[in-house]
Length: 305
Ligand code: BTN
Image (tube, rainbow, N blue to C red; front, top):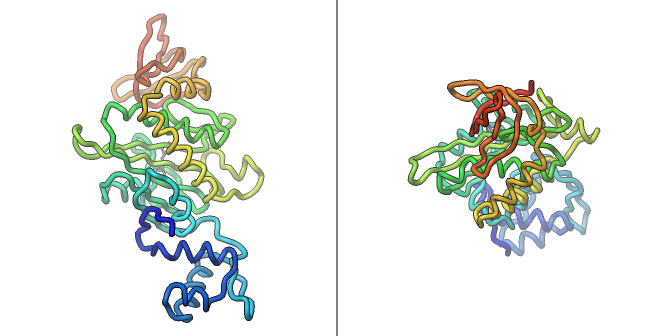
């Protein structure tokens, strides 16, 4: 048996059973293998059908999954099995905000996934539209505080790469000038041992103020496929960042940027700068030419002039 992260509320064995059901197996065989009654197997099959699995039942042959739902706790469990970054997964059909759930649990290496959020949080206290059909998740990490500005930019690169998208400083993922994905990195705990919450919202099949993958591809897109590709990419870039390859990531960010080379307005907490976006410096700051003077900004809201 392959051991993956613990999924809160999901028995590890269920994921194994689903794998078997995808190939086709008799209820009797599952019952024998697990040492449970055939009625428990039947109940589990029923539960899967309620979650949206389409299951064929053939007399003498048993059960076979014909179609899996777009996303389910079991599919997320299966995706996370070969990820070394995640120890535990929390899955919600609906919650207020996965970043808030992450804050509550307050442990690193956790993944929080929701099918819908009622109080999705955006940057600068804004709300994030989180209707059914989108992908809303948060990852918790423990890393030295100085990595944080780089981590947010790295997250953007890891997502833009798999979605074939561009980046707007600091970390909006854009497609043809419209927002496809938002990232909200939050810090909790002390400076010595902070917990970083990386919240990611991707417009997949949901209505949004930006653009969705469904609009881009002209058809519904599987949320589990998107989650799987994004998590794998995120993990790869995260380890790249930790192993000291920031300069390579920074160059990739520059490559993917739609902000550099434009006149922009950047609103920081205490002032607004208007200037030409020159570069992303080694610390992850945006270099602006403001009336002939070079200014470096680390965070803020960016608007195109
Ligand atoms: C932005 O303003 O661009 C950031 C939006 C981040 C939204 C995601 S959805 C998952 C996670 N939970 C939240 O409440 N917000 C983030």
